[in-house]
Amino acid sequence: MPDSPLLIAGLGNPGADYARNRHNAGFMAVDVIHESYGFGPWRTRFQGLISEGTLAGRKTWLLKPQTYMNESGQSVGAAARFFKIPPGAVVVIHDEIDLVAAKLKAKTGGGDAGHNGLRSITAALGPDYRRVRIGVGKPAGNRKAHGHVLQNFSKADEAWLVPLLSAIAEAAPHFARNDDVGFMNKVALLLSPPEKKAKPEPRKDNA
Image 1 (spheres, rainbow, N blue to C red):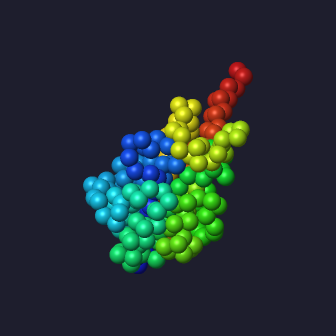
Image 2 (image 1 turned 90 degrees about the horizontal axis):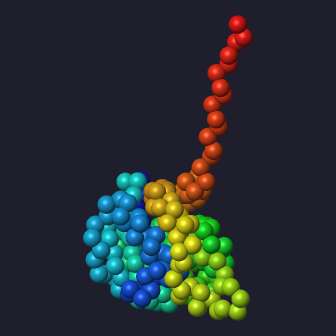
C-alpha cells in the first residue's frame, strides 16, 4: 500500500455562472468520482472544497480549488503540504484545448501548455505531479482560447462528455495504484468496448 494519501484535484472556476464551462471539466470529473465512491461531504478548507474517502483501499482526498483557475496552486499546494502528500501522489484533472474534444491523456510532469491553472500548481509544487487532460478542442475561427474555455459545453458535447466523465470515475481506482497506464486503458475500454462476435449457427447435418 502506498505510504502517502492520494490527492485528486479537479480544476475549474467557482460559482454557478461557470459551472458548465469547458474550463470546469476538472470540477465535473471530481464530482462524478465523489458521487461514485461514497466520499464524505464537501468541506471548506485550503481555499477550496475538500472531501475524504478511499479508492482501492488508499485514503484519498478530492479537492476543488475555489480560488479561480489562475490561483489553483494556492489551494492545491496548501492541501498537499498539510497532508504531507508528495507531487507524485497529486493528480490534477483539467481541460485541454490542445486535445480534440472527447480525447483523454494522462502523464506525469511536463509543461503547462499555457494553462494558467497548471502554471499556478507548478509554482506551488514543482512540475512532477500527475495530470489528466480532458480534451475540449480548439476554438473555431478567430475566437480566442479564453473565450472558448469559458463557454458552456454544448448539447452536442454532452453525448461524449457524460460517458467520458463516467469512465474517468470508474477507472479512478487505478490512480490509487499509481497505474496511470491502467487508468488510460480502462477508460479506452469503457468508451470503446470490443464488439461481441456473433455465435455461429448450430450445424444442421443433412439427413
